[in-house]
Length: 177
Image (tube, rainbow, N blue to C red; front, side, top):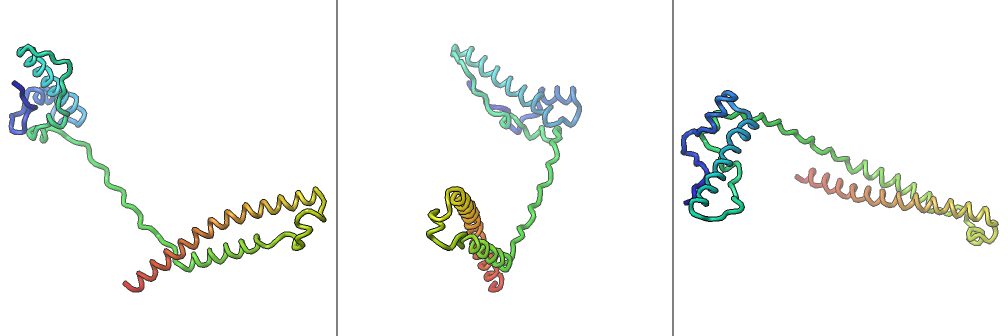
């Protein structure tokens, strides 16, 4: 003989009446959970353990229904739920125009062009043959620094080009639609 959790059409039970007598009407959400729902769940577990003992069954664990299964429609007027916070309205995205991204691409092109010109135009000297060890080290360090800067600019340039293409497509769609 198994019984199910209380149903919605059952009358208010002793758990709700006891909680209302102790805390007054209406109950907060926490009071309702602690005083009513957990008490109903504990009573349900005890009832099933007693039924199992009466039928000479050995039950090690009783799987009780979840707390929402013990909520009754008759309980709703007696519970004050917390007010929900109003949803935050997302700010609309502000897209930069294609002209901004075109200027950005042009600026990055200019910077990259300046970095790609050699420090020393004589290739024999640039290899270190005519500079000496200290000056060669200094020139190579400058070239390494310029190369690192160039690669960073190249990443920014690629991003700016992608944003330019997206802005142009967006502006094309806006003018056509």
